[in-house]
Length: 238
Image (cartoon, rainbow, N blue to C red; front, side, top):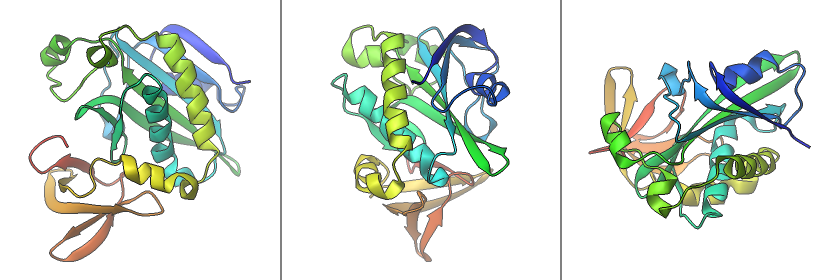
C-alpha cells in the first residue's frame, strides 16, 4: 500500500521525494501546504498558495517512461472527472477546465543503476478565487472551487489522484493512446511553437505513439518534443 506524507512546508515536494528515494517505496506520495522553492517546466517558479494541492508521487522503474507525463495527465483528468467536471489536456502537461489551466505536471527522472525512477510533481488549483489569479497576473488559471462552487477536500483529492496515477503508470501508452488523443485540446488548432526567443506557427494534427505532438506547416509534418518547445495557441493560451 502506498503511503502519503503530509507536510506543512518544504522546499518542493519533488525535492523531498528525491532526497528520500532510496528508502521510500514505489507509489509513495508527499503533499505540502507550502513550497518555498516550487518549480514547473523549463525552470519556471511555481507558487504554492493555500488554495493549491501540491503533491509528488514516486514511481520506481515505470514502463514507457517517455510517455509518463501523458499518462499522469490522464490520471489527473480521471480524478477530476469523478467530481463531475469535464477536463482536457493542453499538450504536454497542463490540465484544462473551461479553457483555463487547473493543474500542471512536472515529471523528473532519477537514474539508480539500471533502474529509472520518476518523481511526478502535480499542482492542482483547488480553492483560489479569480481575483487571486488576477492579482497574480495568471488570467488563464482557474480553480476547482470556481467551477463547482464548493470546497474540494485536499486530502480526498490527493488520495484519488494517487490511486489513478498508480493505475495509469502501469499501463503502456498504446493501452491509453486513444483516450489521451481524445482529451488533447490542441489537436486541429493553429499553435505557436516557442523555442527560447524563437516562435513558429504550425497546425497540431496528431499525437505520435512516443507522445510527441505531430505538427504541420508549409514544409510538411514534423514531431515536437515537449523538452524542446512550449506550446501556445496562435492567438492565446489554447
